[in-house]
View 1: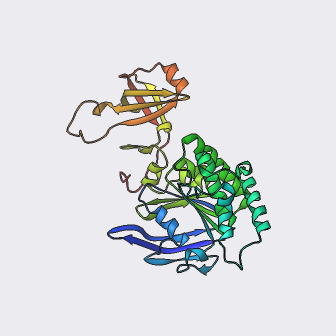
View 2 (view 1 turned 180 degrees about the vertical axis):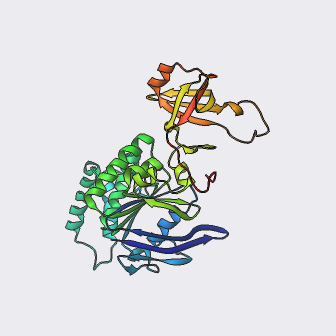
View 3 (view 1 turned 60 degrees about the horizontal axis):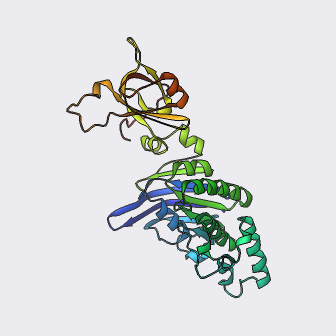
Length: 338
């Protein structure tokens, strides 16, 4: 089911949450709305769901105007960050809830409800927990049950608002891989909100980067990473240095060597080194900024990443003078706007 978002704006008091947003989402696509807190991504998701009404603009679903349709008429499934399961109901009853509250004429027979719930619990690999209550489950299990419940009513669109935000890093990683595999099996048009760059780039077919109520860039994960459209996108998708005369440089795109007379590059002092696992992160201060100056408000720090092996081979010590050379940099028309 395709979704056409046209010229959507939304204001809450003096705060402009969305500014003339237009976006097309193809049927069966998994799209991430990515951006910092307060950028408007959750507001856009709620407008698509029918939980908020836009001040202007329209939403069409498969070519049919849905702007004024009630949330119950939109056939969307919604998964929130905090599960929203009924604590007094078993896992089975939670998943069956949406089917059992359908109007009598649309409600499936009990035998079909039983079969569908069992099938969904099997799909999310939790059929063995059917008789448990939410309090007896882990956070990751509860979120998979919440997803099964959203799928039970056969939504045409699945909306997920920071679905793994309340979980620890290891469980988040496991669940986003699982969500991608599940989507590949079901092909339900899905939109999920996240502020986690890695999550969006790993899971989505396309990433919509939002900043201050406006879309900065739309593209595949590879597109937005390799060809960022603005300083904001470049900086938000990963650590970046703004080096005068060179542009925007990612830490791993800096070549680091010990300084020698005649060295070509940016002369820096190694202020701090953090070597954990396979990567060493170096905090470097350009030599001309190493002493206090009238520019004290300016952060001159340059971050570089090298392999832990290279760090050991070079035998670098804090306080040493080094030279760094950008291997790859990105220039934008609005230099310094990030």
